[in-house]
Image 1: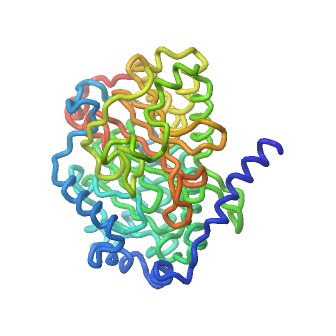
Image 2 (image 1 turned 180 degrees about the vertical axis):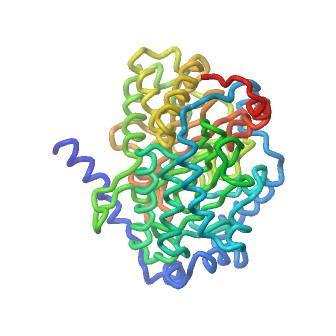
Image 3 (image 1 turned 30 degrees about the horizontal axis):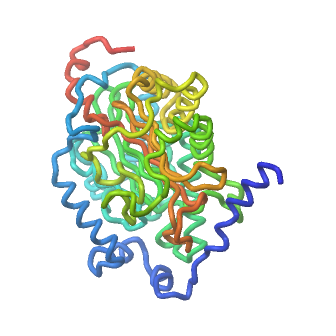
Length: 428
């Protein structure tokens, strides 16, 4: 069997885990829209484990934003105001095209203060837990296209295509499980932050829904896309008009290639747990929603100690693999901004850690994390949420990126913006 055929065989495996759509869970889902589905959680506490997580999220939201750290202490001076070549005029024009079509009530719901805590109320489950802004599936086609035009203007071309692919995969999952009213290509919310989109003042937007959440902060020609979450269940569309769409396979391939390239001693140091779930893990290291992820929704202030092996101690080819992994995780950024962020990451390779959970054979599901003072990138193979696999499988993938030490949501840049407005020179 060729490697391509082997890959297709592995990904097509999800078909054997299709659920029984006559079961109460899926007959209820088929009758719900986004709002009634959310009430199942918030009012009826179904499913109970997710309701418990939801209430915990609400407590976490009450904490003032600090940022993810490795030891509880925010390290200052890591993020600087600079010119990243972002086409801010085009992005502002795209955002203005959205605002021009909004009613007064839509503007009230969709244009929030730049320091609004609503920045932090994104989440990746299909439940609409924060119904702010505009819901794409409720918009007329012209306005919906205008919202997507903001994404197209702000993200790299390849990042925009990745976002569209995630939305299409979500639609495909909705069709598989009879939940198209809850999960479809337009079941996403969009909200703007800032007095108005501006070429000189800070502003941004959030675009979020099931398996795709993007937080985008802009200041002049600088951009922060963090935190973001991208997932897929399954990560291959094998039927319909988008057949052949596959996402997150490059992150998977590069991570496995890096782990397999290590010496046995290095693999031992990188592998924090041999099993994806089990008694060797401390309590709380695994949960139903995030599973092995540490930096997911509402975890804005989490302390995540460094684990694994230091990247600067690896060989040149392995360090290049780390760079390629990070390039995939920075794909949403426009090219110049991505190049600068990769440079930032490389400058911290002496304090960048690569860690691994699970096996590292070709067919093994796994988790990995690349973590430094300026970036946290996580990859996880999940067990089924809508599909029936009880164990992690390679066709269900969650990925996310964080900028620790206050970098998320552009917070670390905000205190420096006054100097920029007074004409200070930017770092190039």
